[in-house]
Image (cartoon, rainbow, N blue to C red; front, side, top):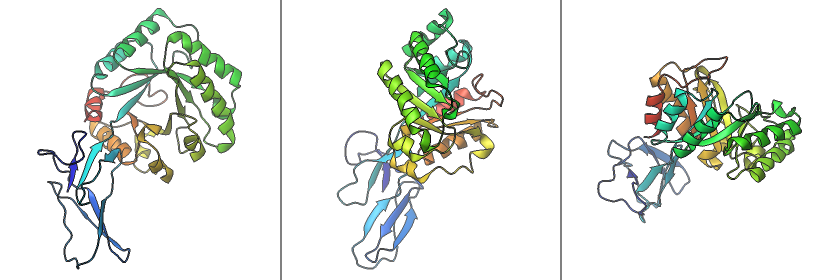
Length: 306
């Protein structure tokens, strides 16, 4: 049986529901395998087996983790890894900020602020008040800094990082990040600078596409955006295979021009199945899809919180 583990106990407790449509794999002594899927109650079976020694395992779904299986090796407890929302909030404090404050009671949210293609200057009273409200609601706040794909002079980037400290935020979102290993040293120095100058020191990297694994292996960023593009390109996107080796919180996807709430839910499902822990889906379009929250924001929060 495959079931939803609802507490920290090792084995299944009465009332914990089964998980349907999970793939169960049976390995034979000759090293061949056969698979089946669980029914609506989470049960499964293999028919017409000869008396031999078999190994049974489950195929873990994206953004789920397995609790210890029972001693029999036949029952598998699983629990979802909590999904988080990463919101590019490229608008001055307004009602969009208030809606995020309200949503933070339902789901973990990190907000990227971008006053003027970076900090732009000292924070206004409105920004300081808005950030305080976000923090009081439990929202993490990071500041936007562009890097020109490794071409921008690091001294100007460090100046932006220093200026953001006056906003009282939690870290930096580096945009226009190179996906090439030759620029690894450039970004390591920038990430180290953030981590040494901020209390939390969260570092987000945004190449917006697949990136060299060395960035992940060396923890250049805490989280890397591996997709930033239109919803029409999201279903066909294939992430690098190495993603499965790392935690879900190491990856994010930003999907825009999404047609409706149904497409939003499908987009989140794809992120979950691909092992991505931070998501944001919007119906807004280029040139700036991050200027306000999507029309289906409340539905997105509810779906991410499931």
